[in-house]
Amino acid sequence: MSLRTLESFLALSKILNYRQTAESLFISEPSLSNQIRQLEAEYNCQLIDRSKRQIRLTPAGEQLALSATRIFDEVQRTNRLMYRFNSANNQRFTIGASGVHLVFPLSQELQAAYPKARFTFAETFNRDIIQRVTDRSLTVGFSFLDTVPKTLQTSGVFIDHLVAVTRVEDPNFNGVAQLSALELLAHPLAVLREVFYINNSVTQFFRFAGIAPSYTYTLESYHACIDQVKQQSCVTIVPRSFFDSLADPTLRGLPLAGKQPALPMGLVYLKEESANPIIRSLKRMARDLYVTGGRSH
Image (cartoon, rainbow, N blue to C red):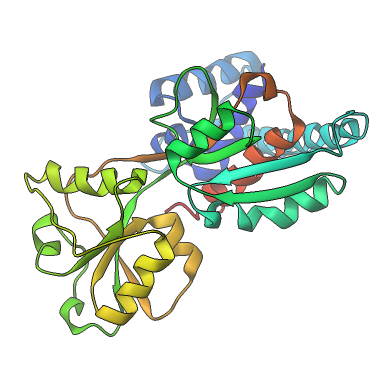
């Protein structure tokens, strides 16, 4: 039994859905299924009850999930204890993100786990994150993964999705459950400008529907897009993770109808940093928040 296989089982025990778990781990569903069956063969018992539409843990599975949780807690504890002996533990640890909402919820937990480290955070766009990780001005980036070169190491965290954001009191959207690309064209649109990865994703959503989009406002930040929605009664399209982080009762998030690009989110770092305990901790904290905690959906 490997820690990676045990990690896959633990994720499945929390999500209880093969497809969603595989997506969260950035592996295929057949690969996840094979890992679980290998565990069942190794322990010679059934861990997952597959007799009904909604899978659930068997008593043996519940026991393994409890034990696995303790194992990973101990691994985390060991990493933190050994970090004291790391000669670099007083150096600055710089995290870049395509949106500060991705890392700010984790900042206090990181600082508490590694009190001697000096954390700094930088918000920038995807291409800049890749460049700055490469030239070592960032220790790690939290960004979209599908444009990262193979020369860098990546760790998937969750799959984000686009969402249309309007004002709750805007009568144009009363009773509306979702918005298609064609319906969105009837309203002024605010999006990030072209240098940002998300602009390409929004444009791709429209092109999937056979539409060449026209944007009323192209702005510099997600918050500027939200401000435009509040001031001009327009619509913006942002990642679901950002919208959820606002927790703003004056705004509503509407799912997009039709095909849209998935937004794979995760950590980007140099391969030589793979054993860095802070990066390992950051990965686990982020998965706990965005996958187990449901912040990505």
